[in-house]
Image (cartoon, rainbow, N blue to C red; front, side):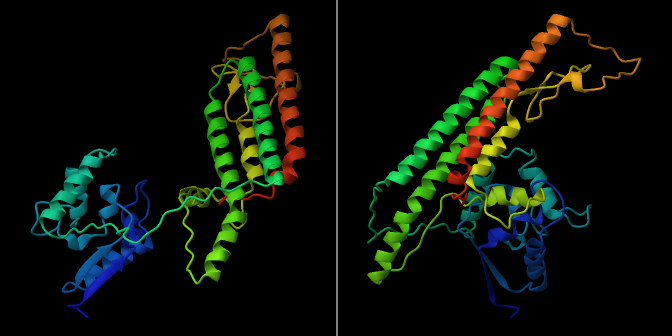
Length: 322
């Protein structure tokens, strides 16, 4: 066993031995490193179809011989943190250029330790299937377009009231995600039929997804979000409402526009008590009336959107985000 060949397939799973955002090392990364240390005579082959995008992701590849004793990157003053020295010299800044990884790849290629191949397409056939939407699917798409048109009109009107369009980028990002997911969902029935036909012909069916949502799921897990249930399309829309423009009560050293909130607060409902040492902002009657008109306008726009979305909730609740 000591002089055997150890092939680590999907080795990128161990890339978080030195996490990008700091914190503790992953169990997989520590296990792979420990395996290399316990089998000093064994040969190791790291195999993956996922490219390395950062030098930190190579920390578990101790047996490459790019750092450590006998190399130009051996640190004798920090408990043998040879990779730390390698990282500091090769990629001194947090923002790493692709050129760094290219230089490492060239060095590994020159030493004969790096092999990169692509599957041949000989004998492969490529065909694009055009899917005709059914009448119910067309109605769903048209309803979605009307919903987003109405929401855009409300967002534009609210932005004019508060004088800030900062939240529009959130709106358009959600818009793109919504329709990408909707179009993927509308293709599912036809995809199922194609798969059934292929299976009847004795073929093997493999379905590939270009976007798996893994990064968003990892972020949700870190934030303590329950991921046991599917997220419906309607949830994208209601999440956008959290960024609907609104106004804060006037306070010293604070902007009156609250970004990323759907709460609209009226100063008449607040007990405005200020520290005697803090400056107070006092609005004239005309300014107060103008501000109240803006608040009422924002409330009306948001109320109209919510009423419209509640009507469409049963439709988009059927579709989940993959």
